[in-house]
Image 1 (tube, one colour):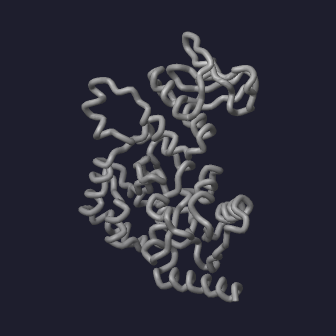
Image 2 (spheres, rainbow, N blue to C red):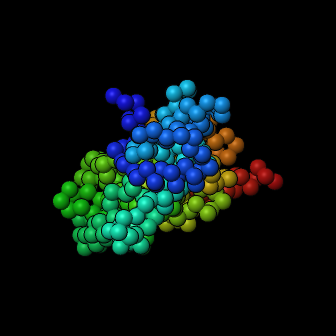
Image 3 (cartoon, helix red, strand yellow):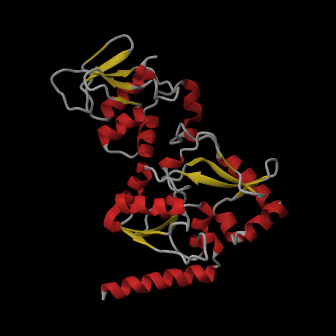
Length: 314
């Protein structure tokens, strides 16, 4: 198997688009062969011998000297300093439109290639949730208000008997859904949902100076209801990419981990990765997570935390 074809996810490009992407990234093509553009490798900094090549169709990069492999988005990220999502937008902007593509380009502009569900799917599931007594009973039981159901476009799939929560990129583009069964604790997400490359609700709170970090999207929504900017990691396994997002957007990061082993591991990882930016708000042992608390408890907990910080700073 060709090592250079492993990481592009099956996507193909036009050679002219690859040329535009390289030019826009400040990369000069040294030569070209039938299938590849030959360039200097930016990953090991050798500017004497052009040992890197980018496939004209797949966009995959491979260096014959340092053996670095990267897909096109990773290459653009490294070369330009863009984030993952910014790189995808940049790549999309360099497309060479056909006559058919030109007709629909205005509707598709800036839409990332990895979006698997569109806004119509969100509206359908959300509409079902608003009309379903079963969904309303579930959300009420989770202390999710009607205004939050509307704000976050929370949905319900009657076929699968699951509530759905849309997940967006930092730029607000729909990536897919996380779903949870109404009965029991069965979880089912959109196939291929890149949970590790975003944070739930980041698109809404990224301009805040501080942020509260929790595991569950429902916990983030509960905090939002109480007036606190919150994001969710969508699980206790925090990726390096999520750590980088927190570093990029926030100066003060308050971690509220679940009261279990996984939550403890999440808290420790964020403390190690983010250092002095992190403060930890510990829950009373009688609560497993934010979801067990009523709004008054949450507000009092946050007030107590703010008071302790104020006392330290005096």
